[in-house]
Image (tube, rainbow, N blue to C red; front, side, top):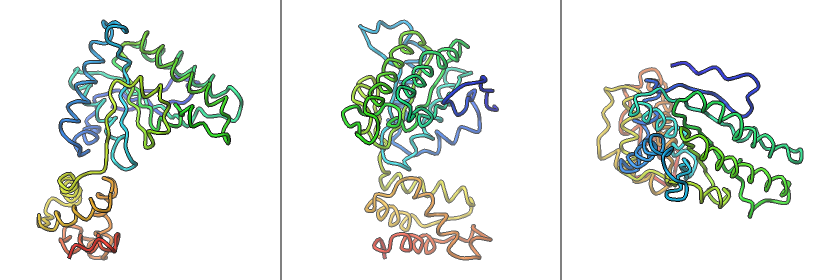
Length: 295
């Protein structure tokens, strides 16, 4: 489905998408994390979108907030979109996916960050929620929005940081009370930079770390199939590459780019990538990480 038209004058929202969308299936299927983690995320999403409206905030305080935390390149943002798409399928859609840009809110003007943030949570998101669809809101790199007040730098304006983070917390509480059809998915590369009160409000914090050897093999196989289904690399070679990547704490994005590095190592492979061999992949690994020669 195409993107939904943004209302005029909306601040801080990158795009709206109505899900499910077949083009978004890869965002779930091709992000390799533990199956139980995917199950937990999807089960949480379905529960909160379907049942939160009838729950007492005292009896079971569900804020409708899940946090994906981990280093860059581990697929958090992509997974968030895939999670929303899978929820739309399970709920038999449609579902509105709202992509917020937290970097649109910090301001050099005292108090402006607070006012902009308050508008997002108190006006813009509730207005979208009134459309009546289940709604998933992505707060990518949320450490830029819910800045740790304890770690506020004097180089920033600590008063404005406090006020802006206060506005986020108040806004989350407001949406939780008034918009039971809204669930937030936040991501962070730096969990220590996120305010403790924001973390406390998260119903689920899922750590998305560097892939292990088994996951790296699956990622490599998927990337190779994308290039050409006929490429067949020996499992021994894939295992050697995977172990070297684990030792180097390679993120999932860079694992996929290793295939690209192998293809671009020789002109004939760039023209006919289906000729890629295990030796090419090992050579690309050594070139990328000279200390990681598995041979």
